Image 1: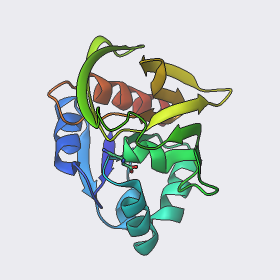
Image 2: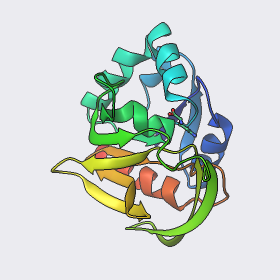
Image 3: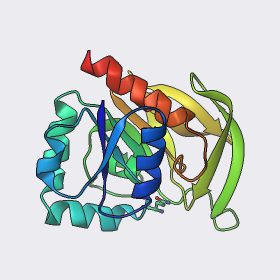
Image 4: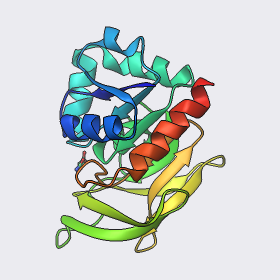
Length: 191
Ligand code: GLN
């Protein structure tokens, strides 16, 4: 399985390393052509508005929309989840608009701009170490979606078909279990 990590901003090398560790071939993606032979894509955290601007600039917006519409799995983490969402609280427009979720940006407040907590993630782990950095949360998940984890009653991991969204940064610890879960999704959709 070949999985790309969108390399416009964010912790790209960390995602690549964890994907390799679970057995995928992982590559940073800097040009749209590089999407062609991928089986799955990770959109890392960073600043969603900045990544969105860069995606428009380098032609990734349409290309990633096509990628998703071709049933290829996409995993959005933190800002990546915001980019995937069909709805963003307080905004009329969205970015990729691929995944049927509604998100609110910077949802965990000032005191808690950054924190780490162990949490159960359904189908993934009972004690997953989640690192939140100015994280969004998922307000709503569409009809066909599943909630995989909550923190303080707020949805922080959700899946809808071949889309996976996490409000936190799964690439910033040594824990590979969420990357393994995504690799399994990629395998499922490839076969
Ligand atoms: N607050 C950022 C945004 O709104 C996301 C933060 C992150 O990816 N760590 O895009």
